[in-house]
Length: 239
Image (tube, rainbow, N blue to C red; front, side, top):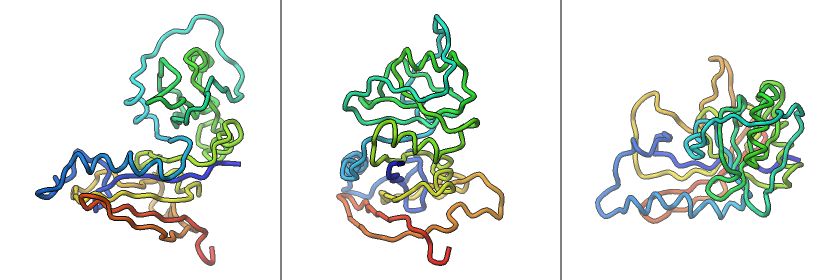
């Protein structure tokens, strides 16, 4: 059974995702205090790990590609490293481009979600690093299969989706988001084309959120004017 997935994000009031572009705080509001809210709120969501896309995970891991001596790994079965009691840091990386050099990120156990087309040598590298992995089908796009594997292999009940716009949009389209948690910073970006929370890459007639509805259940105003909103994602009436 797949874990509950909470999309947990910080945005400006116009839904943009790059804090470096946000307008500054009003007089008397501490910018550092605003930045701390996300990490302070996250534990209240009760998750056993977090997920992001390949680009974000590469920035975090800062690992380097290397040649692994010995045979590659031909099996396409999940691999579980020494997780111990750590939360999970899950990279959605179909092509196998993230290099870790260790089995953890910010102290959380690293898990890669891959396509079955990654090389045997890359799997050997992950095993040498102690990084766990599961597969999302031949092309790495079967997110439902990957989430089922995370639930079955690791027994996690809740994960935070902290992706960029593309990853979030893919999960929305797949109907895999159970809750949306948004911290709205008292700031604007204003520029067209800057990433928003969800950006599914589809045709003009596609509706990634079709058949889904949001039910509000929590609003909280935090210090400095940041507002925390939570919505359950439900099946839309008549869908």
